[in-house]
Length: 394
Image (cartoon, rainbow, N blue to C red):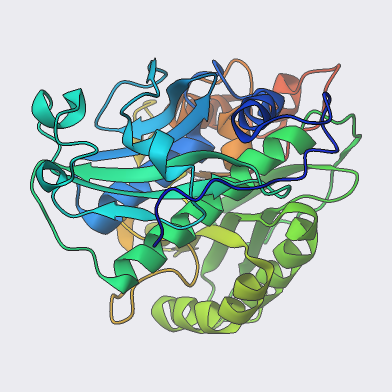
């Protein structure tokens, strides 16, 4: 970890041609087009995962621009707030390419008298800078605690992995503003199983996208359903295809063995590409209606009961191949009665205009079918990557 090492960046691709690092950072943050956009599940999922991984009360995805720090996503604080960058931890973190860790803030003269420490009681800070492809550091992913604590090299590495995930999501914000056509039909044919009706909709940019959808019937009659997202820039589509293939190859394996084998197979490819992949993988027994679901950092699964109630299925877990060694994946279970619908979706579906949250989307597709998702796509900018799959027990 280093301190105060301002980057010497080549700003030739920006106008004016010779921006200093602070002005360049502000220009790139503005170009991302996410300031003031309100809560977004693709960012909130990262801060939620950071909270679960480290067990801290406060996590932030902050952007640093125009001498202010704006909270783009947070767990435990107020979303969308902007505070002066002076004396803020994150304004210092973006000056260095390495994470900044302060085990006890009261012992650090740079921050001991700041409002965060003296008034709000922050005693521990760890933050990793968020760097775009051109080298500009635009913000941080950080965690805070009211108690001093140690932070191991393994902890630093995990925080950096989560920060890389955030970098991918921020980088995609620029790509999503480019005009692309929507391609449908990238999901496999729905499986045929007695007592279960499966439907899917997939909308991708013409260059391909990172959403993963797979559903098929195993040899024992169980229906397997998977929805996920790969964040890897232009390599997203290729890696998404690899992930889907790895899922399909393990259809007849027990759920725990399938997930373990999946992660072992995908870890090298994801690491080399600097990619992050999340998955919700469910096994549905058509006879009993039992659902076993393993969540690998995805967090977008729900059951809509026949009376309209929505139960979100969440299990703590980091993205594919990022779970700490020795930490097992814990499945969640649910029982589908006649008329109940299992809904899995991508974060692009939850981000559609007119969709309030996962529960709202789940109610829409349970009542109107997955075709209703197409009606939510804007006619003038059909660029979002969207995937939804449902299983209704009849």
